[in-house]
Amino acid sequence: MAGLKYSRQREAIKEYLSMTKDHPTADMVYMHIRQEYPNISLGTVYRNLNLLVEQGDIIRIKHKDGGDHFDGNLEEHYHFICKNCNNVLDLEMESIEHINKIAGAGFKGKIEGSSTLFYGLCPDCMGQ
Amino acid sequence: MAGLKYSRQREAIKEYLSMTKDHPTADMVYMHIRQEYPNISLGTVYRNLNLLVEQGDIIRIKHKDGGDHFDGNLEEHYHFICKNCNNVLDLEMESIEHINKIAGAGFKGKIEGSSTLFYGLCPDCMGQ
DNA sequence: TTCAATAATAGTAATTGTTATTATTATAAA
DNA sequence: TTTATAATAATAACAATTACTATTATTGAA
Image (cartoon, rainbow over all chains, first blue to last red; front, side, top):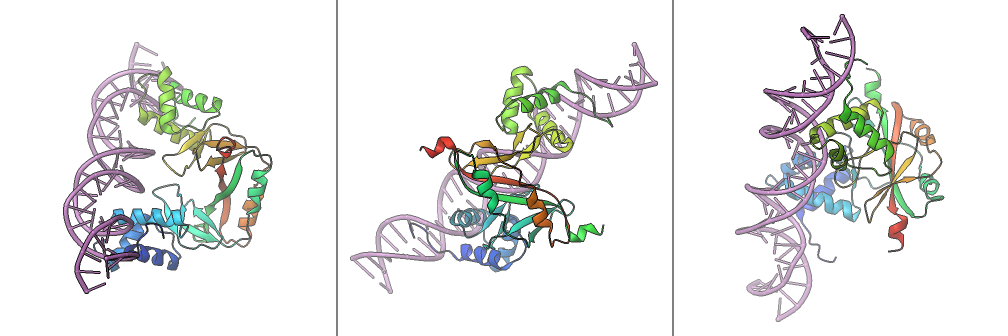
């Protein structure tokens, strides 16, 4: 695999993200992995998160405030950010991949994909 | 207007963004406004960009790399980011607002809106 | 198995994008 | 005008992320 060596740390990060239903930030990943590898470096976490995103093993979610969030769920799904509590939730909804065709119609370039974020109030914050 | 005073700098920023077809970053806005107001502060640019976004006078585009971009075009439209040159382009396409209804079906919270970014190769980068 | 080549690491410093602070200036309204 | 206060320029502070470097871990071959 062209200059990529195994590392326990990277594996632990990937494992964690594939298990949790949260959408942790780099710092939250760092905090968690430290339980297993107490002297892992925050830089290592960032480097591997970027690597894993590049490889398509995890997804990066750009959040309005603060840093990026990460998701190890590779199945097609969509995210919702609550305007009140700022939590990131998964949405159970049918695919909207057809919007890529809509965008591509009449566009001289090539649409390879898209990312959509939904905003509003989450169930918990609805009831005040 | 409830504690908001006029300022030339803010007006210049708003004016610039409503005129240009680019989607400049805070720094690019800063560089441009400095031609008219040579000693405007970068902090002033950031503060006013945030104010204008809050008021709905401009739109914030979260870009993959580097900082946010801004757009003074208030008509409903969509953005495309080229994977190669990283430029932000406007897409001429029909509305996809219906995706909010799709997302809302079966969701216990409230979908108030969404933002979609399209990715791929722009016309210029297509021909290598 | 060693062993060499090199990717990955921990620890730390540096960078970047952005926000906060503060003394001064501009605006608005009486 | 005068007064109240929002906005400013300049700068310091901040948070998220990346770069640097000497050391360690992994891999593939002798």
